[in-house]
Every structure is written in structure tokens, then in C-alpha cells.
Length: 431
Image (cartoon, rainbow, N blue to C red):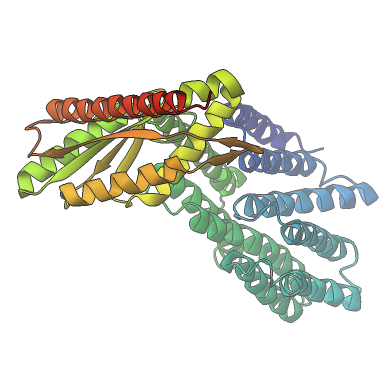
């Protein structure tokens, strides 16, 4: 047993505890795969304590030492793909895990059996290609073909250099690990295309991790007199771990920010974000000398839906209305939920009263149509108030008041119309 590796095992174990603590607050399939990958890294360091063991027992330890390092990289890659739930992605995952394990096992135990090593190298390149071709109609993603390209190039490299006298086994081992972690770098660069510290640190860490398997053997070949401690080559692992924790924290911050500014039921901007966008729209219209409009929409019979069908159906109605509104307005405009059954729509410049009234009639016609909610037919109408800046009001607060007054007037007229219709029906009822 190599006692000098115990500090590395302890450091990785503490790092995993910190990572698990961060990941626990935003547990997702991606963070779960990352944590599993780091457990494989811990297994890699733990197996490294026994690789120098005497006799036969050193082989299983070195196989586990090598395979667990490859498994971690494959899991990191799998966590970054957008189609993890597809069956072919699982086939790709298991084919990579199995082919890497088979090749490393043959490389360590049966290096002298040329045909077995050649066959394992061919399988390493053919497995990803076979999965990609059999599922090309369902999944035809650039990341999948990057895996096929990387492992195809790896297979060719191994067939050429793995039997090289003296250092063939080392070249093959380094090539496996370089391919796996270059794949991690590629996958993370594709999955996290954002200018944040977490993305930069993680991608740079994976690139450095892959580079270790080129730089370290080159230093040993060309500058053998230069001694570099093994902990230096392990630094990229810790950089990647820090980068992943930063990514999780960044996602948590964005999620909390979204919750603070959006309605949890419909996902629409809440009143706080609505007021901010309203102020920006008014200021923009004032600066450019154009018009903008505000629509305030109140559902007429929503209370009756809650009373007769339950709040569950009421929530589904609100979600359906929110999605309907979002689909019908421009991407530059804003639809928000500003009350229990009240929605507001900001029609950003350029617009005018005619366009705003056209949008209002369109939304009202949609709400006048019965909704099918879980097999139940729900009818909700709407009262809509429209105010145009600067014609109806000179500032944000006044514009909201003007739109509210228009909406209440429309609701009152609707109620009076319904009462008149009911009165006519009563008076004309046959005796």
C-alpha cells in the first residue's frame, strides 16, 4: 500500500463532501451524474494506493485505477448532453463504459496478445459509431458525432502506436485518458455557452486535465531531469471541481432571481418585473417620441370557476390563459400576471391605439371560446382596458390608472349587459 497517496484521497473526499453540499440544494440529473463522476475519481485515488502491490493483486488495482478515471470522464460527458433520456444515449453511455473498460483491461493484463489488443482497439472505435448509426433518425446531434470522431481517431492511433516497443502501453493509456477528457472539454464548451466564471473555469480545467496526458509524458521523454510532483498533475481535477461548484451556484442564483421576478404558477413576469419593464417602455417611448400601449385584462367569471370546479381547475385555467397570451403577442412585448385573475400586456413601441385595440379584440375572442380543462368545459370571458402613452397619460402610474379605469368600465358594461339579457329572458318566459 502506498501511504503517500492518502492525502490525495482525503482531499478528494473533502472536495466531494463540499460538492455534495452545493449540489443538494439544486439536485438535478446533471448534478447527480457529476457527483457520481467524482465518486469515481475518489475510487481512482483509492485504487492508486494499491497499484504498487506485489504479485497478482497489483493488476486488479491498476485496472480499477485506470477504469474509474475513464468512467468519471464518460459520466461527465453524458451529463452534458441535452438528450440524456433517449434510449440511444443510454446505449452510448454503456457502450463507452464497457469498451473503455475492456480495452484498459486487455492493455494491462494481456498486452502481449496482439490480436486481443487490436480487437479491443477496433471495438473502441466501432461501438460509438454503431450506436450513432442505429439511432440517427431519432438523435442526430453534433455532440454525438464528436464522440464518434474522437473515438474513431483514438482507435486508429491505438492500432498504430499501441505495439510500439518500450512505451507503447504508456502511449495507449495516455491516449485513452486524453480522448475522454478532451471529450469532456468539448461537451462542456457546447453545453455551457455562457460568459461566466463557472463555465470558463470548468472548460479550462478539463482542457488542462486532458493536456496532462500529453505534457507529462513529453516532459518525461525530453526533460527527464526535471522532477514534477504528482500533485501538480492533479491540480486540473480540483480546478474542474471548483468550476462545477461555481456552475451549480450560478444556476441557483439564476433560479432564485427567476423566482423573485416571475409568477410561480404561470411562469409569467410578476408585478415587480412588470413595473420595471413598464417604466423602461415608457421611458423609451418618451425618448423616441413614439407610442406604447398597456392592456389590463381581467377574467370575468374566474371566481365562479374556483367556486364550482375547485382551485385546481382554476390554476389550470390561469396557466392555459398565460400560455395563450404568450403565444399571441410579439416577443418584444410583455405579458405578466399582476393579480389573482388579472393580466397586463405591455405593447412596446412602435404601436398605436388601432394596433392595441386589435390585439385586445384578438385576446378577448380567444377567451370567449370555451376551454377544455381535464375533460371539463370552462367558459371565462374577459374585460380589457387599454391606455396609450402619451395620449392617455403622461407617466407610468397615470397610464396604469387609465388602463384600470377602462377595464372596470368594460367589466361594468359587461355585467349590465348580462343583467339585461337575463331580464329579457325572464320577461319573455311563456306562462
